[in-house]
Length: 262
Ligand code: NBP
Image 1 (cartoon, rainbow, N blue to C red):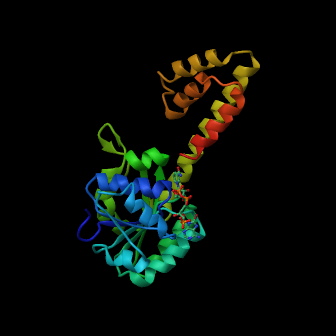
Image 2 (cartoon, helix red, strand yellow):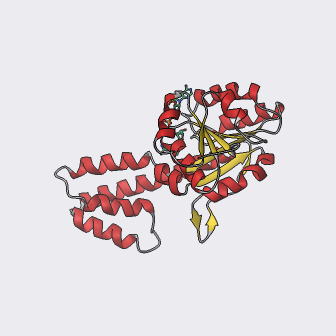
Image 3 (tube, rainbow, N blue to C red):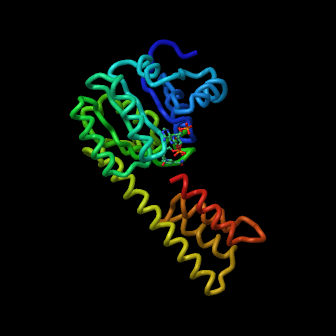
């Protein structure tokens, strides 16, 4: 179905990459998909991506050749060495003004370094925090792009189209230079982990003074109607309402699962 050149390339066909590609395609963009293990490209094209504006690439060179200029290439791979490896493989095939976006959970200091190194080569680097896990990637993540600001006019439309909306406004704007996007994502996660710690301590205190699971769930439900209204308070209520013979393990299991979505 996809014809012509791609608007953006995306490398990394795990949970985040696949869902972000489907989200971009739903918003009218043509995406070129690539993955280190190329069989995942074939499987994605034959299944989830079938009939959508999604092209596959067999190699880095193939990916680059299928993109409009300036080329926009987003990485959603394991943070660390995999990001440096793909940047190294991409650079010889890119031209001045092309854009590399790292959407993984990279250390902001790595993004600072990558932004500086690529600027010397004329490549625009963006380190973008992506939040919301699998569902967010598919239906609207919060996006925190930062890095080389010259890239922003070329990615703004895609990013703000696919982002979650709050009161009609996209949950995405340019956050600053170099590693700013990943710094903001780190602070964002820090706040969320602080929230989880507070919820854990409240649970512990309630348990210690003899409040039962149902009473706890009702309290969290009440809190969720006021100032504390949030995803974490809401799922805590759901977890506490869940009937299980081993409720403590159940709470722990679901918390870890949800932590991975942040
Ligand atoms: P993963 O973090 O599990 O990474 C899987 C991808 O990385 C695959 O494409 C894999 O290729 C590739 N990869 C690995 Br692993 N090692 C590689 C290497 N040495 N060289 C090249 N490619 C390599 O995927 P994810 O859970 O979709 O997350 C992607 C990024 O988004 C991560 O940085 C993650 O921290 C971040 N994030 C995740 C979530 C979430 O809810 N999962 C939320 C927000 C942010 P292969 O298929 O060939 O093995």
